[in-house]
Image (cartoon, rainbow, N blue to C red; front, top):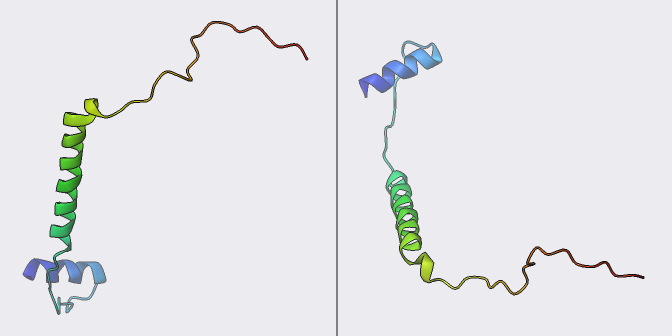
Length: 71
C-alpha cells in the first residue's frame, strides 16, 4: 500500500495523495481460467485434429490447361 501511495503521489504531483480503497476482484482469475480453456482446446485440436473430416478434392483443378470456349 505504501508503494501505491508513493506512485500515486508521483503521478498526480500531489504529495498528500493516498490510496483510499484497494480492492481485489475475481477477474484476473476468470481471465486465467479462460486462457487455460483456450490452451486445452488447442492441445485437443493438435491431438485429435487429424481425425476430423477434411475437404475432398472434388472441385480442385488438376493444373492442366483447359481449352477456351468459343462464343
